[in-house]
Length: 110
Image 1 (cartoon, one colour):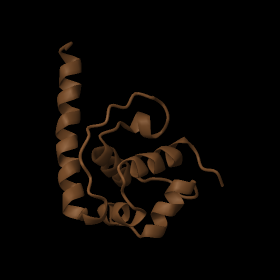
Image 2 (cartoon, one colour):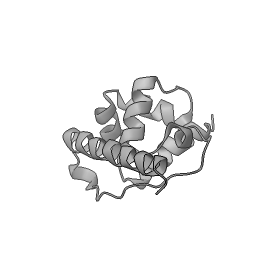
Image 3 (cartoon, rainbow, N blue to C red):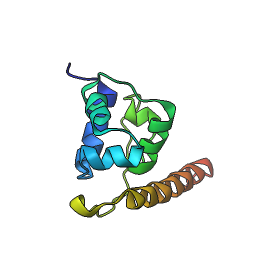
Image 4 (spheres, rainbow, N blue to C red):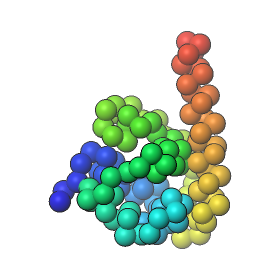
């Protein structure tokens, strides 16, 4: 199965961040085989996974599912083999804050 927009974007986001499927799985609290299934389109994301993925990559659900092509990532220097789950949790927390600030700026017209 070739996958769909969501599975392709998930794989692209992970690879662009130089994360392995195993690192992503640990962060999401799932088995590595689940990441493979999500990336090849044989499994679908649940609400919890969607929220965690969007926080980690600072993207919207609309971007992840192909409704929008608007994506302005926040660049962090991932250290591919030394990333710990706690690091990804911290990055996701910072991204949630940044996303909220972007939203507030948009609301006030900046």
